[in-house]
Image 1 (cartoon, rainbow over the protein chains, first blue to last red):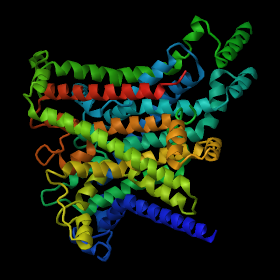
Image 2 (cartoon, rainbow over the protein chains, first blue to last red; image 1 turned 90 degrees about the horizontal axis):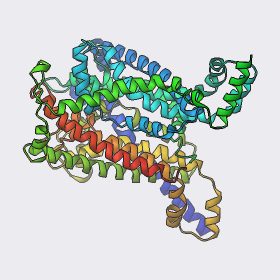
Image 3 (tube, chains in turn green, orange; image 1 turned 180 degrees about the vertical axis):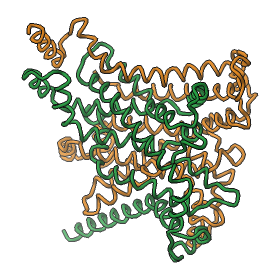
Image 4 (tube, each protein chain N blue to C red; image 1 turned 60 degrees about the vertical axis):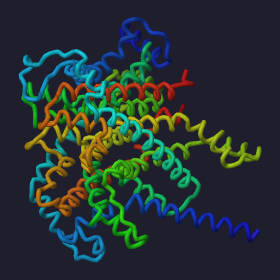
Length: 277
Length: 312
């Protein structure tokens, strides 16, 4: 009996150590980024001093003081409008998919899902040419348009699951009580689906916040977003690692905070149709 | 009044999935039409545009009427070896997809089972740590890895040197591919792990109990109980990771710019190299983009079909 306990203990210790090691491995790059962001330019490239060099906030000051401020403004504006547009269009479509039956419904749904896999690189050329025709290059509007196109499939897919999760009887009852369809959606569906919608919104925000291909090729000066800042730090006299790391830390914080806040719904939203089925 | 009653009746019919009449049958249209229209305008039209450009010799900065239709000229050049880098790009892209997907799925599944097998108070912290790579901007994360993997002043080599007296030139011609793979695995294994973990948590316990009574081994449990129940979820991860790793651009672009030489010039980077300001070979780039599109389309269709199998 005691021997078995010993074995169990060893196994659980081994498990604990393994989990700790795995966590450390995944955390390590972020830790490095944090440490580098707090070091002076010379200390950043001296790995032996990474834990001991004096701390400084200069990098954050320099990063925000430079062009980065406007990059952040662009990123926020683009993420906000993209999310709004994709949520409105996507949720409406999701409602249609969740609440109506029609012959080719599943085929349509999978066509939409397959659009999610369209490689950005395959359409960035026509986007570029069309945008230059309409004089939209290097504007936030263009990025919002691109990102909305790429976020809609995802939004429909996630929101459909959340809406299908609600019992249709609730809507029926409201309808019987004399609510119009629009009132039913506004008063019954919307409040109930709000947590899921928040999770979907945060996915949209993350997608557009971190997007690189369109941002890099369709903007040049005015509409640059945070992910493209890496190109700015590749100066001839060497990469400004500290400022870059500071940018990275600033960029990851809001996303991380959001993601932690709704992680439960995020994971559930992603696994719809795959767990139930 | 009569209208309203009729409407209510028809709506109840809808919710029960009864066969609707013609007009009602198209009621879904007003919900899905706006999104569909936007997608046709912003995904289908550009795709068609790419196809058209791929048959021309259009170059960056030309007036459109200067472009000539060259029919399959661009494709002929690609497939006949006139563009020696092309087959290399196809090969490493597919290899990268297979390796990244396999490693991320296996490792993700392992981490998920590990997390599922034990309860401890710090679990939310571990989950939080797993979210960090997913939340980090890929381009900036890749830049960070570039510093960490630097042969002279990177922290990875510093640790390897002080622990094992090893010095690895991570971004050399031989290893650059594997470094990109390493970064991809670091960034997206948590994605698989979190999804599979959620799936494992949602599994019912009865099948495990009866399997335990039948004396099933752990491997048998995995093969005959867990995997079949998680089949759709695993296909979902497979689909997402396979396609995303095939499309990979930012990580490789920042980490290696496709180099050294063409060691990490994946298909999307090849498109970029042909189309960028120096070369401006838009027509040829569009042809390569189209090849990428076809590969992505074929693989996603196969995986989606597999995932839908067994659905009614």
